[in-house]
Image 1 (tube, helix red, strand yellow):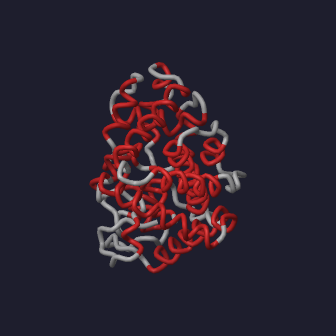
Image 2: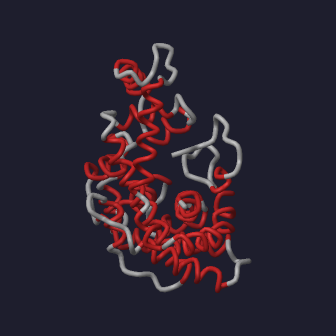
Length: 285
């Protein structure tokens, strides 16, 4: 299910209408909109909690955006901008689908999002607490966002159990199936920090001296992925197998449309991965 609701959420990062909505409230530049929009459910938060909750970003990169973005737009303005931009993006990408299709998908996804357990899940809880949206596309996007952040919180909790720090996780993953060229720049880490993280991964037994993944690292990360999936099952158990299958059917054409704007280097889950053969460049987890 992650690969069907995650692309719906991701329009807020990649669609031009989402970017324009942030710029309209004074959040010019991609990362101002990203940090303000994603952190806004937490209120006018400073950098430290966002470094912790977002997990993979260099603290210095987060500190360049927070708390200064709140002088450009309040959290309430950022929330309105992110929802406006997401709805405009989805409207452009789903205009051929019947309104009844979108309304049914929104209702089922909203029901699933309403069943999330929020204890220990800061971003999931903050999104659950937002006021309910009125129109189907707004409801759909907000439900997808709640489920996405809920799952992400669980993933971070599972990663913490490995004893790796955020950069070590990122550097290891880029030795498996991700792109260092993409992620190092996108997350704000320096070459020196990256090299030191790989040295630590060798010392911890996750990489060999030749910087290839070890069996220990591979098995440990597989356990992380399995724990993430288990922790995310609650909403789908609550919805039930039959209605979950129906929701997947409804979301598939939306996810397929949304995936067209997602960069191939992104780790965002895409529905095609469920049936297509994997290759070394395909994102996962």
